[in-house]
Length: 199
Image: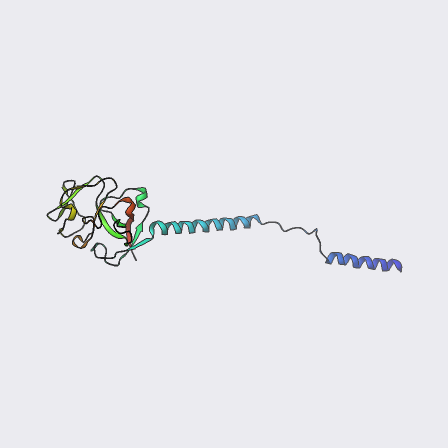
């Protein structure tokens, strides 16, 4: 009788031990495949975000045409996308359309003009036509004869880091012919116009 009571007591104790905390339970194993998958996914997401940010910074800068100086190529209020890395990889060339900040007025908005002459070139305007290095400058678009040659009435040889720019609407453009704009330097240039937005 005493033995059976003792056995019953031991059984209850055993049950309690089973139901209570068991510090010898196995810890969950780390699923390395899942961790690797999450790591790869996070890495890919970071690369996509970085690429998107880079594209926006390098090619998504917007400048608005504030006047009619670039007609008919660009109209007033056209929004233009600027390639800001183009001239970090190469030099500006004749015919490029650029956005730049006029040095005479750093508070002004960006101006959009076409490069006509680059460092080392000699330029002058005679009888309404542009002469570059003593040869008639061949335009890729139809433009009016220039009524006011400004400072280019006599030959000008550009020094290092000087660019001569004109608007495509030659008789309604404030550009390198005038002291208010003058020659453009690399430091003034924001970048190269590559697209009108919306497309």
